Image (cartoon, rainbow over all chains, first blue to last red):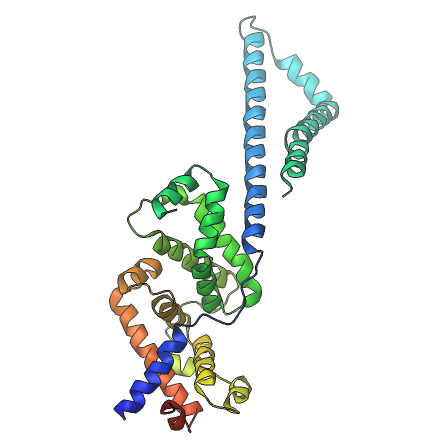
Length: 118
Length: 191
């Protein structure tokens, strides 16, 4: 009985030390590195875009504050004008944002991709 | 490249260091993911996910444990998250013997010719059907040769529980093999 158990345990041990049969893909590392490079490229570009957009907005806010407060200008007519021309204002902002995103993110990503081929 | 230099290079964002890391530890991650999920089709994507998490979280590695242990814990958590997302079995308290539902079709091709090699394949089939915690602990101990303490760090299971799963797991495999292969004796005593 002891011999039986010892031999069976031997087979079990040998078997558990063997890896599963499923084959590991040969190009795994290459595919993974390319995937990571893509993710890092997007991350870098979106961070850059976020920073630039933030700077632009900050500059506009500071400019607006400098224009309105010292001269004690009443902002109500301006707000009324924006409200009555909201389609033009939103459209212009949309077009500007789209151009900015396309230039700063999409085009840059495409150039990076063609250089690094990921 | 030793692990300290490798970690420093990864923290600096070195892609070649990442390539080196993947080549060094891919077997560990592959074996864990395959054994835990039992699904070849998901395994490659999940392995990629594990390594990307390792790269992004490398700043959190303090060097308190071995790099392989830390990577193992990321792989373990990624597998558990994936299985929860797919609503598949996670850690269950079910009796493992009842959980092993080996259909005759799973094993009859193996039983046509019983030798040591087919016995080994049978052990693998039984292991595939065991509950997750048993498969995990057995793989980490026997295949990846982690210590009890390291398995505790990877899985969060106390050392005593790990030892208990290993011992019970072996008992279950023994029992199932003698059930499935009534004529097991000649094979065990062959030269």
